[in-house]
Picture: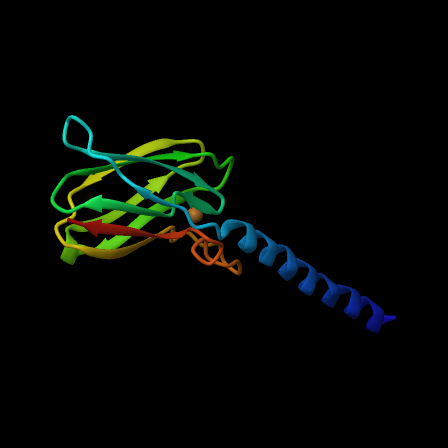
Amino acid sequence: MNGSHFSRFLGIGPGLLAVLELVTAFAAKPESVTVPVSEDNVQRLEIIVDSYSFTPNRFLVKQNIPVELVFKSTSWMVPHNFVVKSPEAGITIEKDIGPGETTRVRFTPTRIGEFKFSCTKKLLFFPSHEDLGMVGTLVVGQ
Ligand SMILES: [Cu+2]
C-alpha cells in the first residue's frame, strides 16, 4: 500500500520534465535582424518579450551609434529582465521588464563583437529563464 503511493508520487517527476522540455523546444527559434539607423541617428529596435523568449534574439547594430531597445512584454504574469554585462564594449544593462509593460534602454556600443544578453530571472527549483530560451546575441559591427 505504501509502495504504490510512493510510485504514484514518483510518476509526477518524468511528466513534469517532459513538459519543461517541450517549452524549451518551442522557445528555441533563432531570428536575426539588422537594426536600421533612424533620421535622428538612433538605432531603434522593438523586442517582444514573452515567457520564455526574446524576439528577435539576434540583432546587428553599428559601433559608436546610439542604440535604443524598446521592450514590449506580452507576458501575463511572469516578470522578466534584460541583462548584458559587457562593460569593455560600453554595454552594461540590467533592466527589469514587468508583465505587459513597455520599457526602453539606451546605450552606445563602443567595441565590435558578439555580446550575450539574457533574462536572469529564476524561481527556486525551476530552470532559469535563460535555460528556457531567454537568451540571445547582440552583434556589433562597423
Ligand atoms: Cu525571464
